[in-house]
Image 1: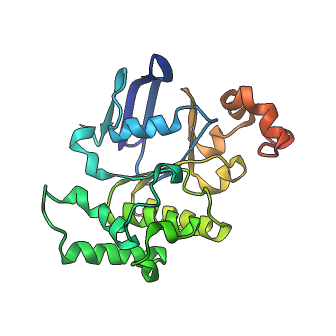
Image 2: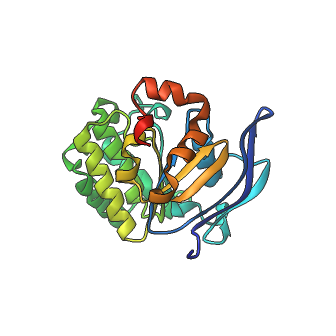
Length: 252
């Protein structure tokens, strides 16, 4: 295994005395797309918040390029869940994309021509240039996701944390997002995606992290995404998932 860009050592996190993550050891390498998979309440978004330094763990440590989070924050770009965004906020598409440049600026330092050029390139890459002056709440679900992915690309980060980026988008947009993730991985970037559609895990992700408050397994999707590991991850929910068609037990 090569040198990890994210090294998580013994991470435990609790909310109001309720343990959400327990003793997580995880090494994430550069140049791969990881699917972060587990049931609701498994701690997936909590893991992201810990990597971002938003929450303080009960125990353990997270290193980014062998450094503490405080020294590495601008290396990480975050695409939040749609429900976490105030779509009524009076910001245009260009405003949101340009926010990706703020980690590179000093306090009160203004954005310059280079920042605007990088933002314009990111919008073109996502096919949203013609939406630059639109208010974000006036966009479709797929367009909104493209805006926040453009913001993360504008940040020129090394690590991309995407929390359910396919929610509310059409299949064409979903495939476009996957193509962009693959391009980023080829450039040596690291992408971790919270994902719920088990049927597309093997198609979309080279590596998978199976999580349910504790780490069930992680590694190459071909060897880790097995019937046994999925059952261990979703044990209480397996019957429900089969009933609604998200898992075909016979084919696992």
